[in-house]
Image (cartoon, rainbow over all chains, first blue to last red; front, top):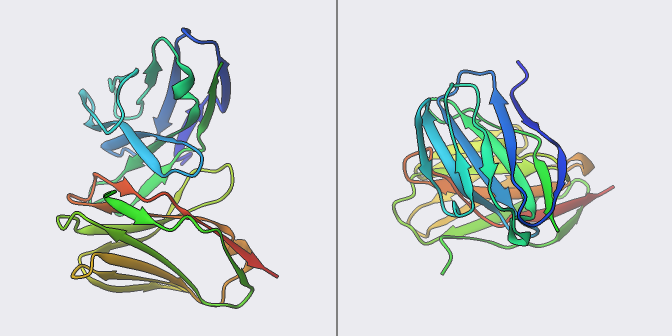
Length: 112
Length: 110
């Protein structure tokens, strides 16, 4: 199993540009999450999904969108990038029963 | 008051020391308690997962939960330089709605 994979690893965006962060898991987990991590801060939940076709907002959803058309994929879309979105983004998946949790390696995004 | 409070450190200990990492929380509805280890420039990895109060041991790691005091701890025995990382606590009401602390950076010196 590859676990949770994320692409790209790094990206620099100009203000106002858009991009999609990709996340894929091969463990057939129903639950998937997108977090952002700012320096010295914990993880803040952006969006989550409890299964294909079902998504919901987390703590900090403004400026982001998600979709979940398959169990495996959970892309995060940034529209009109702003400097406040400079962060490290982590995708995670969670098994039923919640005892198996896996994070991807992260995407480092800089908006200038 | 933040839902989850965690001393950011940094914490530096000599190899072989017992390390104590702690978090407090304000939401009495939390029932699931987790500890993660995050190496520099990597994603977090789940270390310990406990439900309700009590202790859980896994090798050199022991997690303690005191719901009456809203306080959780992670103890690392015989600490090793490879334990140097940031440790994140997290809590959840339903098991799938985690709220994270800010993380404590730990350095174990040889």
